[in-house]
Length: 235
Ligand code: OAD
Image (cartoon, rainbow, N blue to C red; front, side):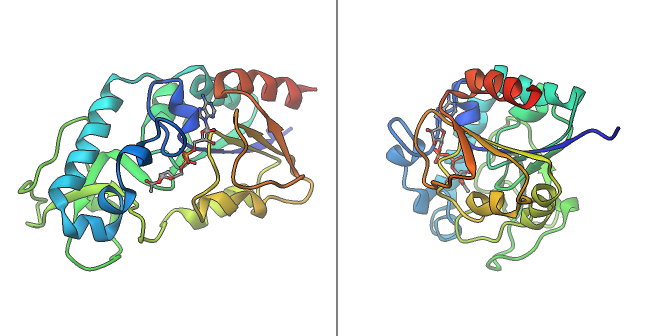
């Protein structure tokens, strides 16, 4: 029998127990920083140094973080299911936990690419450079002579992987959403592409921005919630 397909959409909450801050809510990054300054395309052109510094700091924090039991449980689902992780996170904790199919909707903190001054230009995957956890500074140039920028989908930019993610959700037998406030589109609307008979589970200790009776809300932190989710799908 072919394995059932699970589409997993994750947000900052799945990495919270690894010590990485979420964006909204108390202690969230957007309480300390203005996303229009550090995570928008306008902010980038206004002050590249500030934006580079913000992502250098995230990269450094990531170098010290480890996947938690929720990342490991999601990777472990691959034993019995065909799992695709669609993550809004720019960390690499799903990959480090062993997940083999990961779609990054909002980019990757450990990668950079050249900017070329054209608003919302498309780029080629060949231009993307893996810098690991190293800082990137103003004046650090790509082979084509352009300033390197974070390989991040800034606010105001298109989400290149959204079509791929929609296909995964539309094809899934089970959908799981973990640790996202569902405030940011198009990611927040992805679950609506699931087939009518595809159950949709959400693991989050808090209320999220979307209420839909179709969604079964497991009101737990990610690590505990994963145990509950696995129990329910095995029933
Ligand atoms: P948010 O910070 O908006 O939401 C995090 C969610 O995680 C909240 O609903 C929390 O209740 C929940 N949470 C907190 N601790 C948790 C835990 N231990 N286990 C499970 N859930 C927990 O983060 P996202 O929804 O991921 O984009 O934010 C979406 C996008 O907004 C991000 O990708 C980022 C941000 O601006 C960009 O920077 C482009």
